[in-house]
Image (tube, rainbow, N blue to C red; front, side):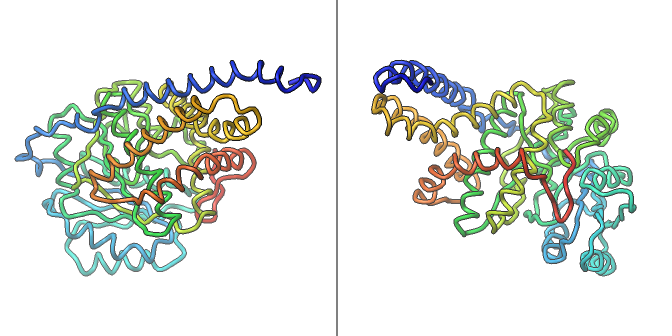
Amino acid sequence: MPESLNLDERKALLIPTVYIITALLLLGYVLLMIYTRGGLDKENSSIQIDRIRDLKLSVVAPFRDEEKNLPDFLQSIKKQDYNKNDFELLMVDDHSSDGGPGIINRFIAENDLNVRIIKLEKAEASKKKAIEKGIENATGQIIVTTDADTLRNEKWLTSISRHFMSGQTELLIAPVLLTGTSFTQAFQRMEFNALQYITMCFAANHNAVLCNGANLAYKKDLFGRMNGFRSNEGISSGDDVFLLFQLKKENRNAIAFTVDPNAVVRTEALTSIFELLNQKIRWASKSIRIDDVSFILLSLLVICSNIWMICLLPLELKFHTWPVLSFLYLSVKCIFDYMMIKRIEALHHSRISPVVFVLSYLLYPFYLAAVFLLSKFKPATWKGRIVRT
């Protein structure tokens, strides 16, 4: 804006621009509210479960330095009420340097479950390679991927299996719930609940845009038909979403979701803000490779709507011209965000306090801006490795 313009002239130029941007973002949020309305109620609850034990499941769990989490993880698998002859657990060791492999070997020796430990070769090093290796050795019809730091109840496999009985479902998106009581963990839970809401509602409209490899199931022959991860093998992460979008291009109706509480896996949220930022940088690094139109538009809406919150405050303080529009924008965004989070909380019987929500709501735009900027300059890392993007 030219320096020669006085304050009134600057206002005259800025006001229409601010009105248009705010109105467009407001419209975007309203359309998003309409699009996702009732999405969580669309899951097919009439699936018959009397034949669930006919399916053979292969649970693939990559791990790297998970010594402290493995005992509880293995016990949660041991307690599954699914016929032990109809599922196997493939633990894929991604070059662990702690006592994790020893814990698994002792578990194998002490239990009669079908559990195998598979080691990656020296030249193989990534979660994608671990999943590929696990699938190569899998004997089940359905692959269920999960993480070694997760827990689940005894009906987990039963719940997942029933969604494949119709034969139409090729990939199932299942819920992941974060736990933890610190503010950093509650902040993550709030963000994650919103993402879960978007994930399930878009999938309900046969327009899946997100999924999580910590709780994902798909037919083994689908992985082969899609040539595994060959189309994105140069990217270390993305073992979940790239497969999702490949199937979406072929047959979006073959993607299903579940909000069944029995299908949930739980994992503890990160305790450090630096770990959180690094995780989000890693996620952002793979997002730029996604060409799905719905995903791109949704990402732009989320980023722009939050960055605009930062911009509105100095503009309002400087020019004092649009308090009503600003209040309306912030209110609609706040109400929708709160609605998303509360809906997921109700499903999982969890609770985030209103105080934490308000603080997180105010901090989130700055956090998102930090992730966006850091992703441009800082390489993503995972357990000491630089993630290829």
